Image (cartoon, rainbow over all chains, first blue to last red; front, side):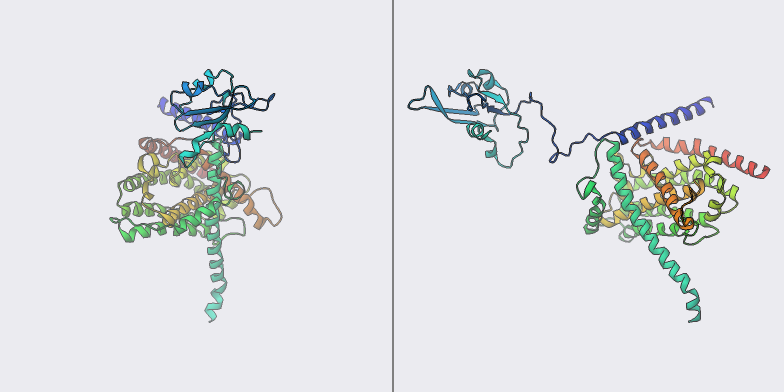
Length: 146
Length: 328
């Protein structure tokens, strides 16, 4: 008989506490981000696919076309080509492509780069309908970037 | 012709009442459907419907159009006649209780001496519709949903009636207008708090809503009794559920919260409807609130709670009421 009433009162009290929790949630601000219209700021530490850095002092990338990244890549997804030009010291970069369908985001290319010309991008909206959309031309990307 | 002219005002009254009833049923479903999803969203810290119209206010209109456009699939092994009949049986009786409800002193369809009995009798037809629908679907989930619905509704109708009966003993009338009139100094929630509490718990079970939504428990029974229903026949069940919520909340308002009484406004015979609706929708908000707070009960817990707690308490409450009425 005693447990009959104590169960009733403890049960009712826990129900009231439950109502308190949800009414607090009802009046607190929503946390959902309405994605296409609102976006959260991506942390700078985010490791997306690699990108050539555009340096502010020269306004250009620092790639010397040495091909270390191409050799280091375990997935063979980087292609780097350079050519000698008249009056220019060293090689000039002509092709730098990344086949992102094969990239495993290991970062070996960024580690090995002798001029620190590579970095991870903050690109995360990577949905596509064709395979070719993920063959990135990093040279074109760095030239188009402001 | 003479008799026609003599009954003409009454006929017009019936037509107007029926139209107003339909407006309430559909309007209520629109408002509650939107409010339920919006409140559910905000309780879960998400915005709810946001895409159609500002803050998604046209969502229910679009949903209604979609449901109307859908094919009405009748399963091959189902009973074709009863299967089509069940949603109509669920939906049609919800209009009649609206005719009896006293929305304000002057806004009332018909003031019947047996108003409460009419409401309770027609409200329990909904259960019959669920039974027919679930049986005719010829689906094991539907059948299990119906088992649960029937045992649950039969059990919870008892404390519901007993708690209302305590008020009826005090007012000595089944007429809803008389019950409202009897609460002019104090509302019956003050005199009969236990009866109000018991009624509130029973209506959650009667309308098959969480935490007592075992007849349509998604995790066990897909959708319970309306598993096989699609399109408009499904939405008639939903419309009936929301209309039943409105009716039981209105009965709670009439019996415990003083009906349309409140701070007087100009033209209070008519404007009392504002207070009435405010009370009804506060109760419905409470029903939505508890739906998104509590997890679903187990079936034995549900029945134990009714037979071990609600019915004894309702009986004791009724007994005390009768003795007090006799003594005072």
